[in-house]
Length: 385
Image (tube, rainbow, N blue to C red; front, side, top):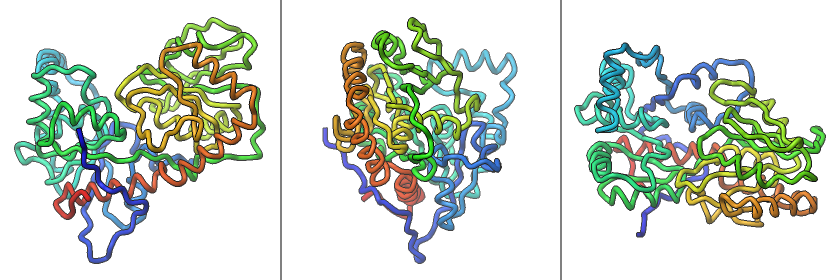
């Protein structure tokens, strides 16, 4: 199936004659608190908010606490959620709280949200005109590999007023096959903060390989099975359970949302690693995307599972700026790791190409520019190119 994709701009150039949409970002709890910290943080998980503000666009953040989604609801509401959510995919308590606090969003032209349950519940109340004209819903893992007809029909109805945005071309194609052309689906390149995630020659190269990640698609079982006794130490930064079988594997507690490890601390681990390895179950979601691009921006060679949800196959090229291996195959993973450990020249070549790829194609400035065009389209001031 052919999919029309908007042309992605590479800079956030706002014409003075262009009406600038007022944008509010609806986030999960946590991001708003990080804005005021005196510590420098990477900006990618604000999805362009900071770049829009720097360009003179009115942009604000509303999070779950602002709309009454904390603390968790009463027993009666929990029962209602349990009865309703499995059937229709909507959380009635969240819908009610969004409805009650919709005034926090109405003074804006566009709402941008990056969480599936917030996006779907927002789409529900949008059908009754309770929120701004434009909604940009950045969805990840919205539909499973096989989905019920009931949920497909529900999403077609819900997303009618929403601009649904995917950060993986593979997942975009997947949703298009379910939802058809009547649902407005767009691609936006996810990009990381290439000014924060940088190489640093002053950081000594350690004698370890690094793997990072907490999402349910991480395949640490395959990584552990691939790890040979003669390999250097493998450091796994995660909150997931990992069955450690070798003495040369170290588990480190880390979680971005709960800040068990600071961004700068993780950056030092990445900079000191020989290579970075990201084992992932074969999923349509772009799992591992942020860690992969962060490591690439730091000039590291990355070994990555070649999953269905790989975000852009025209950009992510095997043996050009990364190493792609079949998911779930320990021997293939082990062979790729051994090659880079035995060929420092190849690891350096791939790391340099990886950094260049992020700077040219997958950074936060490009993401912000693409988001701005989507906000224009959602607000009725522009259209997809």
